[in-house]
Length: 304
Length: 324
Image (cartoon, rainbow over the protein chains, first blue to last red):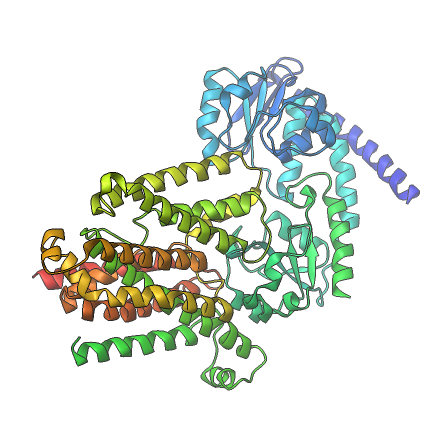
C-alpha cells in the first residue's frame, strides 16, 4: 500500500511538472489574447467566456460539487460563500451559507463581495446570472453532474483560481485511484435496481452519476437501457427484470420493503438491500474512488 | 337507465378490466396469462395476481368514486365546473404529503395516511368556514371557502419546501400527480371497506340531488330538508375524495367530464345517472391507467396526464355531436 501511494505521488508530481510546462507553452502560444499576468479567460459549460484580471480571491460557490472541488484544488481559502447543501469537506461548513444554489438569493451572494460566483448549470439560474452581470460580478456556469464532467470542471476552476497546477496534481492522483478502484466488467455481474424514490418508484438510467458508480463497482444497472436521467417505473417491470440487489439512498431499511406490492420482487422480499447515504454517492468529487471501493464491498456482502 | 345503456356500460367495464389485466409493461402471452390466473407460472403469476388485478380493480373503484363525487358536487353547488377537488381537499392532501416527507416520518403508510389526514382537516375547515351567518353550506360560500383553503395550504406547502432540508421534497409532487403504483390487495380491501358508506349515501341521495337542482326554495316546497341533504352530500363526497387522494394522489378530469358526458347521454336525473357514472368513470380510469403503464414502458406516465389527453378529445367530440 505504501509503495502504491508513493508511486502515485511520484507520477503525479511528474505529471504536474509536465502540465506546468504545457501551461507555459500554451500561454506563450496564446500571445496577445492572454489577459494580464495572473488573469484568466475560460469558456464555461454554456459556452460563455469568463474573463478575470487576477485569480479569483473571493468565490461564492453555488453547488455542493463545485465547493468540494474548490477545496480539493487548494482554493478552499478563497471560498467566502456556499449553499446550505455544501457539507463537504468539514472546512466548508465554516464558510457562511448564502442559502440555495438554484435561483440563489442574489443580494445575499453580493453581500459576500465575491469576485467570482460559481453557478450550477440550470435554466433556472439564467436570471441570477444576468443580475450578477449587472452588478459587475463575474460568473462561471458549471454542468458538474457526472464523472465525465469532473476533469473539465477541475481544470476550469483551477485556471480561474490560479490553482491550475494543484488541479493537475489532484486529477493525476484521482485518475490513478479511480483506475485502481474500478472493477472489471464481468458477464455474471449482479444486477442492481437503483431506487432513488419509492412513491412512485423512480430509478435512474445509463450515464447518471450513481449508475456510473454502480457499474464501476462491478455491478449492472437494472435499467441501464434507459437514457432518462430519472423516471417513474412500474413495479411490474422490476419483477420481470429480476434484480439481484436493490440500492437505496437511505441509512436504514427502507419502509417500502414491507409494502405488499413490493413482495413480488424477490430482492425486496429477501431484503437484499445495498444502502448508500454519504454525499460521495450523489455528486462527482475526489471521493469517487473511495465511494466505488465502499460500494464494491457492500455489493459483495449483499450478494453473499 | 335503459337496459341498452346498462348493457353497454357493463360491456365497457368488462372490456376495461380485461385490458387492465392483459396489458402491462411486461408482455405476456395468452398461455402465460392463463397459467397466471390458475395460480401457476413463477414470473407471470405474481405480476398478474399481485400487481395487475388489484391495480385494475383499485383504478375501477377510485374512478367510479371520483365520477360519482363530481356528479353530486356539481348538483350540490349548482356549478358545472365543480370537481372532486373543488373544496380544497387536494391542497390539504398535498400539505399532508409534504409534511410527511419534510419531517422524515418513516413507515410505509405514512405518506398516504398524512395526506388523508390533511384532506380531512381541509374538509372540516371548509365546513367551518361555510357556517358564516347561519348560511350552512351555502354553495357560493362553499366555493369561496374551498378556494381560500387551497390558497392557504398551497402557501404552507411552498413555505415548507423552501425552508426544509429534505431533498426528497420535489418527489412529493410526483406522488400527488397521481398513479396507482402503490396498488395492492390490502390497499384495495381497505379502500372498498371505507368507500362503501359514502358511496351508499350518495346513491341514496339521488332523488334529493334532483330536487336541489331546482333551487333551494322549490326543493324546500317539495318537502326536501335542504340543509340535511347538503350536509350528507358534502361529507360523503369529501370522505370519498380524501381516501382516493390517499391511495393514488390527485387524478383530474374523471370527476369533471365523466358526469357531463353521462348527462348528455342519459339526461339530468340522478337515479340512472349515479350508477352510470360509477361504471363509466371506473372503466375510463382503468383504461387510462393501462395506457399510462404501457405507452412509455418501462417508464410510467402519471395517470392524470392520460385522463386529460384521452378524455378531452373524447369530450369535445361528444360536445359537438350532442349540440348539432
